[in-house]
Length: 122
Image (cartoon, rainbow, N blue to C red; front, side, top):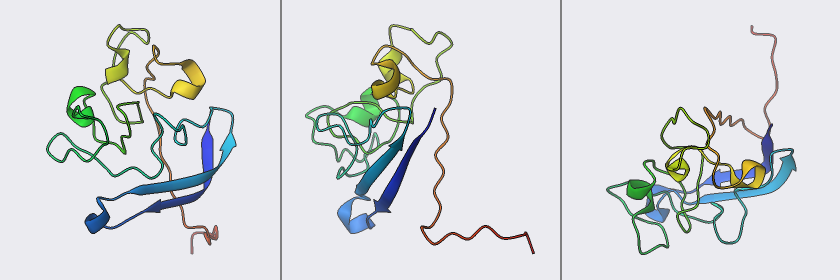
């Protein structure tokens, strides 16, 4: 499964590393642009830099830094042995694919410049 975005931008420290993302394509569902739990236009939050819109500290509660909006989920979280563990929200959750109660074993996030040209390795 994959989610690919045509536009991906991270702002400066002065803007709390806000994420701007758009142009979804893929077969995993667009969890990053959900109006309630998505990450687009959200600042990056960690346990000691609570920049999310929630009254809770999402990064602390969900065990990972991310571009939180309302303590949804993202690609950072605990590795849980049981994909349907009751603490699944502390795991890696991509809710548009498997819902809130399923945690992934791993995730990969790859970023390349829009003008990327694949070379021959020389």
